[in-house]
Length: 205
Image (cartoon, helix red, strand yellow):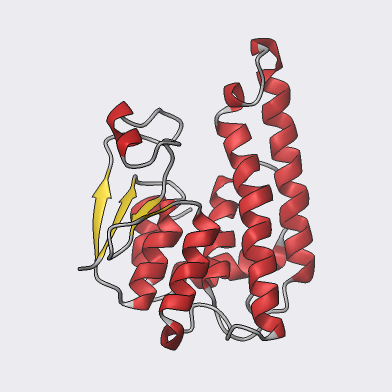
């Protein structure tokens, strides 16, 4: 039995789909009838009570959520595919650092920008939540950019952390210059496995 990925076009499930493809893992893709910024079907809460994507059903039928956790799990489940550096190495520590950093700071900022009503009970404060999220996302991306080893985040090989962070450049609406991350994004878009998935989700962005 393979994996089942619940997703929708343009969502953060892009990177999980890319990781499964890079791992050459058998999976079924179920795309929900919803667009980013719009609520998911209420019936989906039976699968994920938090009502968010991506949601991954593992081969044993158990449910995984939280993108960074899914990426770490898949990297460990398919070590021969080199989705991440070997566990216990300094490079793996850096992989964990930036993957979790992206989940906590970039993903949350993207959610505050897209769904500001979740983060304030004052409708008049939603614009402030949105603009603060864009600023904070730029600050977080700039920090990652400054630490990118080159040509990829951790050095000479692409990991799923690169694919993950490249995704946030699509969602970013600020004007911070990010030259190292822009080069990583371009390499991710050109990747023979990830590129077609990128274009299906994000076009030429």
